[in-house]
Image (cartoon, rainbow, N blue to C red; front, side, top):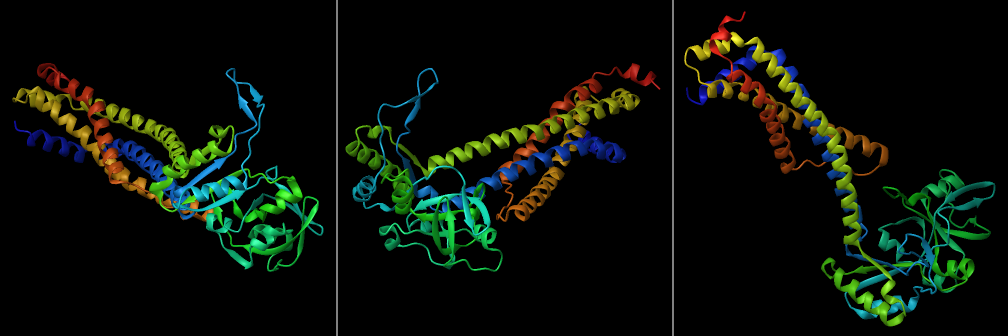
Length: 413
């Protein structure tokens, strides 16, 4: 008997038992669909993060901060350093002068606490205070909706002015009200609203409730020093990021006694952390979905074992008229393999539908441009894995069928 005949017989048996075949491949279909759907969301999430990160020049940026006043000792305890180091404008100027490959440097100051009380008359809300320079808008790829952003003169005069996010403006002043020119109270100080920002969201960063004030205002009127807490260095070309990071290390060592302790992280390194986190999430979610693939494989084996029992006389007749063990083995292996392959192909369609549906749901809830991504490699893997499940879980039933004694099989009713 050639290879075509057992394959033909196996396919005809699947057609003859349509309901059983459909029920058998349903488990594989759902399992593969779940895996494809989950992994497509993971890749879609990564692409969304990378896209937004690139819009803000993240991959061509270097982030740096002064060493913390606290560190962990060899026993894991937090210990205060016996020295302090701070970033200042001397560092900013030195970094700008160190290379013509630096496009700009954006300094930031933290004024303590994640949220501040911001009040207008009897209305009060909370939001994040950002203290920076006019270049902040360029670095964040953010635009003014009405009014203006603070300028170099505001920085020079440590002006008590602010630009507020769209949601902050709505919470304080109500819908349809332009708050430009009005005063709000931040902490114990009054600031004049000079601008309202365009709406912007980026995952857990809620831009719309931010309030931005000049960095010099925070230094002079709130903190009482000229320190910078961290800086962002925008490099003209992505390929020069590592060179600029090395140049910054030399600057810190030259200007500070403990310059080697300053923290420097490139945008690529930050993106690697994001990729690592997404990979972990994909592994966890994919493993959970993979369990259903295992269950589907066990279901295939059970169905095939039942099929062997039901078709004992058929197997006996075929062996009596000359069918070899390999022919019987091939027939039952083909049945299991076809079920899993067909289930895997249908599972890809289901997975694409699941991914598209969940992506649309995420978009409707978050206002992100979110698209599930299914690569050719992922689809080949899904089909290959489902085929492997068919082979693995079809081996024992097929082996059992091929080992039946034809005489004993013909005696069975």
